[in-house]
Image (cartoon, rainbow, N blue to C red; front, top):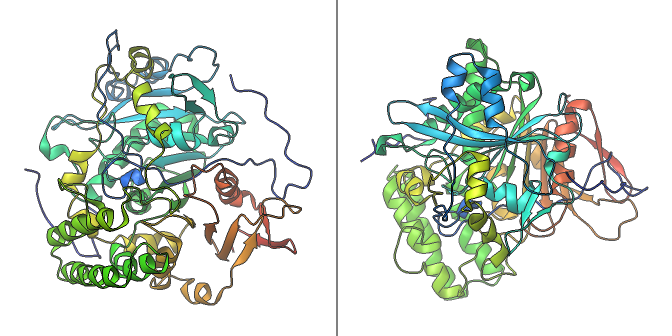
Length: 509
């Protein structure tokens, strides 16, 4: 079994078609509308939140060999490693990308898979954006194929171009994190992460090696982004970078983080579930009382640092990821999907990418060979205790030193906008008093648009956005625009918001 241990909240460090021109009355620079909802996975806590897929093995044919890049990095054969990692364009495409494995623990043969897309526009200057799916155990290939990457997979396994992928203006680094997720793998049980220290340590090793291999991007602005359970991964790796940058030769040019439907403080979210689920009509009065009792018990276990008991109770109550029968939530609502109030089950097309990744020619192109594409169940198993631990101290540290964007889809259930606000109101950071007094502003994409896109609250370098549609990535809404505005803050760009087109600046004070 993997080593066990529980830490308290104060855990120590351990060819695309031509782009259409933007509308004349667009309020943003040439930015674009894209989908951005937290992903889903089949049955892992906060599903990839999501992005959990089926276990996928290669189909008949030659899948090629796995490409391990660490030996090329260590021997200084960087150009050879880069050339080998080039992904041959898929038929009908002319798109540059790189993929392969980076070894993060030789003892356990732990390897992290990445797929890197240099920005379409000015890659030499574009920010490098790391995308992490949630879960735990959700593959970032979900984000790539379903949410905001350049490709969309159809039912017949044909690739279509996403109209406005994030890869237009950002150099996107999709990573299957932690080890054991998606195409990432380890040969030993001790190779699996049991807490966010383990997650951050391995991810940091992968990032350092990545920037050695792709040194042209080393000085570019760097942002860490992710959704749902990655609301823990993102603060963890940002904290690690923040601590190590002053004492290491290799610096990572961290500028900020963005968290979607972020599960960063389980206790405050769990405390808010009963009232929230009752108010949106998913629980009746009797069910609310039961839910309230169970949540109270779960919070009691968290306060006592009885992490495993808290996880098991929450799993039976809500997720059902590691039990054989439906959760209480599934029984009383009749719904297996808790990412959109309007959908009881997950859309079929969200699973197409897993089948696509089983095709031999695809596996050969992205250098994963016959490696099984994992559904993340083992990752969740080893992170059971971590599930109910908070990373609030780390997020506080990041909010005090970097730009932070936190956004929610207003139809999400599992990490609802009101639950995120509940967490934020309980945080103590340098702008917390101003935040509690700050009013929200109405956000429209176009000045002439009758539709409201969402609401914005901004204090200094912190911005909170709640979106009126689905989970922020999938529903062809405004997340690409939102993310672009956030990243462009380093250029002192402005986001117009409100009916009266007042400005909200995301630049440093």
